[in-house]
Image (cartoon, rainbow, N blue to C red; front, side, top):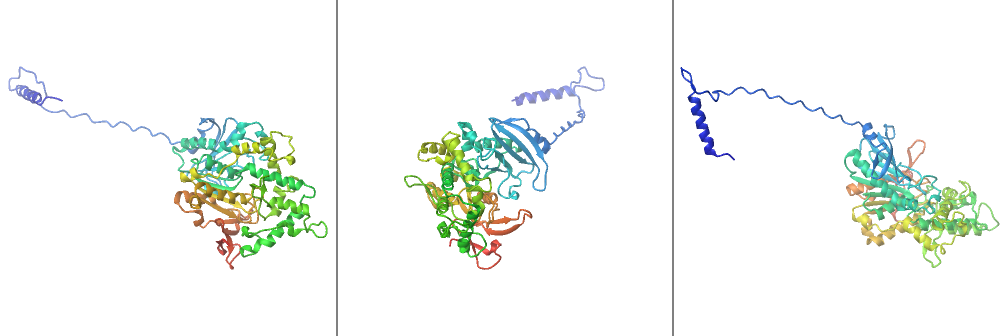
Length: 531
C-alpha cells in the first residue's frame, strides 16, 4: 500500500513545476507534464469467436462405431430414420469378452428413461422389442442382449463344462450389459437415465427376478411376466411329464387333448358369470380328468386309465421322495392350444418343448453327459448336481434390498400357460411376503395379476395385450399402484390391430367377473371380484 503523505508531497511538487513553466520570455525549465489530457484512442471490441457447430444426430451416433467402452467392443452404430412405428434412433451393437452380444437403441428425442428387454428359452439371440405395447416405450433407451451365447433357444449344449457361459446365462449377463449401457447413455446424452426399467417373460422373467435379488440397484421398476424363476424345479417337472407321456398307453392324441380342453371350458367357463370361452375364476375350477374315463373301450371321446394318469401327472404337484413339493403342477384350461406345443409336441414334430428344455438341463448342466437317457433321470440320485445348478440359475424370493431402495415390481402370469404354471407365480408371490416381513410390506412394492385365458407370455383365448411398463413407471415415478390405475388388457386382431375384447386387469386373487349386463367383450361390463 502507498504512503498518503508521499502522495501529497508529490502532487504539490508537480503543481510547482507546472507553474514555473512559462511567461512572456520563455522558461528555463522544460515542461515536464502537459497542461491538458490527450483524447484516448478508441477501444476496439475483439471479434466474437466463431461458435462450434452443433453435432448432428448422425455424427453423435457415429462416434460409437468401433469404439471401446467399459470393457466392451462396440461394433456398429447406425442412425435409423423415423418410420411409422418408431422415432429416429441410433442403433449400437457390441460385444463383451467375445461371446456376450448386446444392442442399444438411443433415441434422438430421449425421455430420460431406459428399458432393458429380457430374453427367452436358453437365450441365444437379441430381441429388443418390449412385450408391452411399443407406444409406451417411445423415447426410451432400449437395451437387450443374447445371454452370452448365440444359437437356437432350445439348444443347451454350449453350457457343457463352460463356466463362463453358465455364469452369463445364469445371473451375470444382464447386469454386465446394463453397466455398459449406462456408459453409452452418459456419452450420448451427458447424463444418466433418470429412471431405469426391466421387462421380461419366461426366462426373461427369471432374469428380471435375478436382477431384483442379486443386483437390486440396477432397475427402479421391474415387470415380471410368467417367470421361470426356478429352472431346476420347473425342468424336473418337464421331465416328469415326459416320462408320463412315454409310459405304455400314456400318449395323448390331438383328439384326446381337444377333448380335455373342451371339458374344462364346459365345466368352468360360467364361473365368472358369463359363457365367453374364457375361464376367469381359476381358483374355483377344480377339474378331474377321471370324468372322461372310457367305459366301452378306447375312443376319441374318452380317456383310458393310462391317459388319465398322464393328465393327472401334469395337473398334480411333483413331490420328492420325502413328500416335499418340487413343483406345484399346472392348472386346467387351454389344453387344446398349449399341449400340442409344450406337452405332446404334436404341433412341432412329436416332442414337446417341455421335455426338450428338461433334457437340455439334464444332459449339459446336471449330468454333463450329452448321451444321457433323460427318461431314466432320477432327481434323487442327482440332487447334489441340481442344488449346484440352482445356485447359478434360480432366483430367490428375497426382495428386501430391492424394496428397500424404492423398487417397484409387477408380476403377471397367464392362467393357460403350459410352459410355466401360474401356480409357480402364486407360490413366489406368497414366498416374498414370508421373506420381506409380511403381506403389507410386499404389497407396498409388488403387485400380482393373473391373466385369464392367456397362454405362455401371449396368445390364447384371453386378452393378452397389456401395457405393464407404463403401469410400473407411473407407480415408481408417481406413486399410483397399478391396481388403482384402471389398467385394461385387450385381445387385438392380428390383421387390423384393433381390440376385439377387453377385460380389467385384476389384482390377485380377484378376477374379472361379469356384472350381469352389457357387452361381454367390453371391460366396462366386468369388475374385479374374489368370488
